[in-house]
Length: 220
Image 1 (cartoon, rainbow, N blue to C red):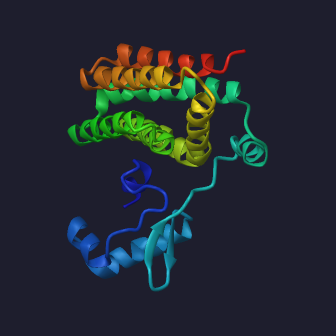
Image 2 (image 1 turned 90 degrees about the vertical axis):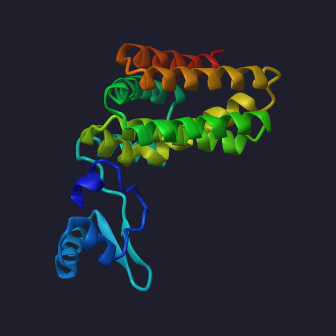
Image 3 (image 1 turned 90 degrees about the horizontal axis):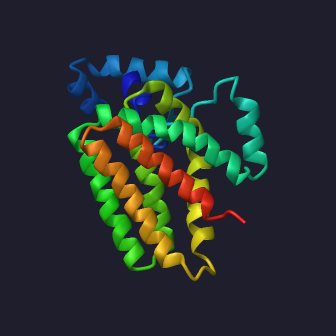
């Protein structure tokens, strides 16, 4: 169960399957599952909600990262610094995803791209932003690196807000919005193709090009 939390199989806020289902899945008794849940609740990774079930909760950030993450939570992060962080973090995630992604994860990425394409065609900025954020989150999961997964979980809200803000800011009152949306779409496709083709170098470079483009959209 802890492995599923660490590798992102059970995302933050997700409701766990019923005890009976978990017992069958792991080949153990329901009391064993119940004890495991109590253990994980005590570790602060799960919480029980009476009448509702057991849910994954946001883990506390590592001590080293906490001051910076607290600052981000209290003050809007500078776009340039957040893009620099994403450049380091997500280029690595793309590289590992090209080496380790599963067929199901590739299918998920492909589905998200299709929905992103539809959102752009319909000029649905909100949907485009959501699909953009989900694409990057799925890519991180596909990297199958527990440290990356845990760190991403600790800053996922900030990063998703950052991605959404970029999409909205680049689209609002922008005569070139449609062209830029199409370019971002092609960049996401390039990342996906490189991951699908198991080309780590190309995946890393495609992500680098995408984040660099996002930053240049706001260059004065």
